[in-house]
Image (cartoon, rainbow, N blue to C red; front, side, top):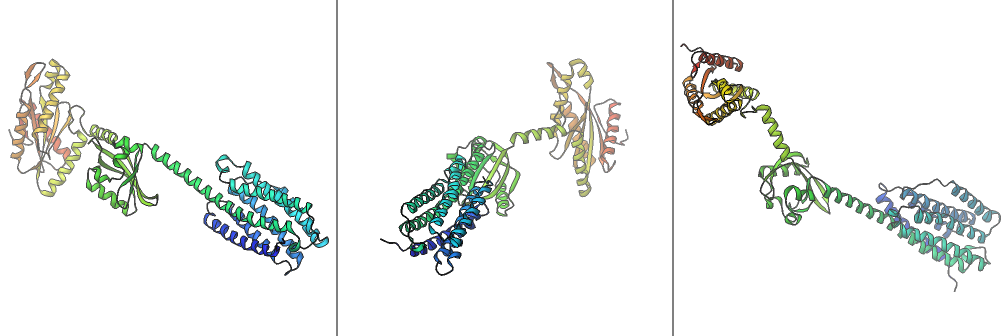
Length: 514
């Protein structure tokens, strides 16, 4: 049965147009991500143009049809090889291919314009398919790493099928000589060749589409694996929550180590249901920052973890899209110990190491605030200098440890006696400074000073003995005596030394007549 080759050529053109459209869509979608797709699209475009010139044979000069058909067909094969190499990042200079291509086109010119011989042209075209598609198949089978080899398996198989089919065509042309030098009447071998090329071109298009899809899936899976490894191996507590309902749908190992909650205990629940927020205001500020798309970065917040303890966390969060959902990726770094160390260091910097009372620097800071408030409210402030009487005797007879015990005991008593807004500070040795806020009259300061003297003179046990010490106090009043804290301290010091040199165990206002 004779097959109409012109009809097959029309089918070939239609198939190539469809293939060209599919490859165009792949190129349009992924051209920014993968190199080489433009060459694959160019190949399919050339195959389409080649099939059009083939179909136009008899409608246009035969020489034009023959040269254009062979030119675009074989040039497309070169583009396939180039495109595949670029797609997989293994581009190689193959100058010899351009020499082979030039020889082929010279033969096409000769056996179409000088010696019109369809048989030789068919042999040459089939040989070029074997040479160029063979290189492409070999590159995909042997030139790729195992990571990508599976991705290109179908494409490589179709390219190899092109080579086998072309070799079979050469054998058929030799065994069944064609008596007519006109392609559309050239017999069964070329008819079967047309059918084969139609099918193989459809398969190569499918192979290219699957190759791109497989690579995309492979890279998506790789990125997912990287994300999972990074997510799970992070030392910080990470949790992924849905914006729609606030429910947690993924946490990492760091979350379990930090909070004590196992994944099964939190997935599907909200942080509110778990009672993790210590301050609702923190949660409201957190949500507000995220909804404004500013995100949250390194903000200290307090949380209640599973065992009921309070944890201070350094929180960062941002909105992301994950698994088709709008989500919040939150990172919590446990800085509880660091905050405690920081507070301890700050306390050490601003407090006396022996008694824990505010030191000179903190006293001055509070005095500055108190004076500003007193100036605004038109109130008075009392600055009291207290010196422990007889501390040298205790140090000499009972040791410095006993002397330290006396200082600590008096410090504790003073802290318990004074109001919350007042300040007692140790300035060094056996000297304390006391700042009384909101004094209406000097008599108020005098009453407090007498209570301080009584409190300080209460007996205490030292080395098994009951011993009592006394205190000498000097008082300066703001703004009566001065408005500068240094001057007030100096004047209260003068008043205290007056008592110290006139019998001790007493109190005196600066400038008071005795």
